[in-house]
Length: 454
Image (cartoon, one colour):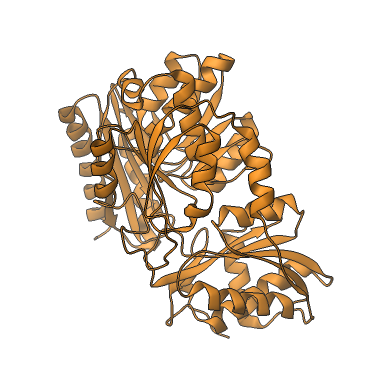
């Protein structure tokens, strides 16, 4: 079967329902994935799905594909997708399949795959597409069992919190899968909750599936101010990304809302190394450094963060997109409900409002992410030539493109992992400095692109 190559992305499989994502497509892909897992013998696979209206039918097709490959399917039903990962690890399964399009609108759907308790991504997904199109399938007759995961999840994860946070939190569940887990974990952390949009509804009628989309948190922000909550939190559609607003309803970006967690860890242990990626604000890096810690910057993408966390034994890793990872033996993946409870616990431990904690960190002005169209065949060469133009003037971090370092700021230029474009971001101690950095980096980019005829 010919599959649309565009649905095989860097970290998942995702497309438009009824067009390039259909039951037949999902059955074919999971038949191929099950063949990878079974390797000539039986294998047990966890299957779960988010709340999208298309997810139940696609999950049924996924079960068929896995069983045709000889896999035994444990269907945990409607869940936040992180619980697929939890179950796969807890039950020592060969892998996991989550039916979801993550934070995309409801007309999209797809699959997130796990090999054992690790992500299945990148070249592995391309090899899976090739296997499916070549028809290299195992043939078998696996079993199908429905099994609950929630009782075990709450038994294990709720016990990690002691109910001492003492915060008032306005929780926007966005009608997504986080409604099944976030309230219980936050209550275990000691939060008093005012809950919005708790009714499960895969059309996401009250706000976008992505809480970090512009304007998505306007209702949450207004509610926080109205009731005088200490903080507001929002979970994305499939439950792996967290958004936060402070007591004034101001959006706090993910690389800043982890500051209380870093501060709490450093207060308890004195030293620690954390891992983020090259887009991370210097605000967080300086805050951690001033308290005896260190932030290492990895390439963008959670596999790189997880690898670096493992290498340096970091207790925490985080992306600017809202995926946060803890060195926890049971929750070693991005689980927004677990992250929310950790933020609440850290705020309780530091005994200060989020806004006051952030006011203690050096202030930097960060630009929006700028994306510039650039053909795949030259985008990496353009970045390399920009690096050479600026290398003599500035130090830089080159784990993913270049984070060009200035006195009091930085400019980032990197090739996108997922599209034909360059990605840029800039930061400075003042808005004027930020803009000056942006002008210099963009000038170098445009000169190099012009030399390539773009």
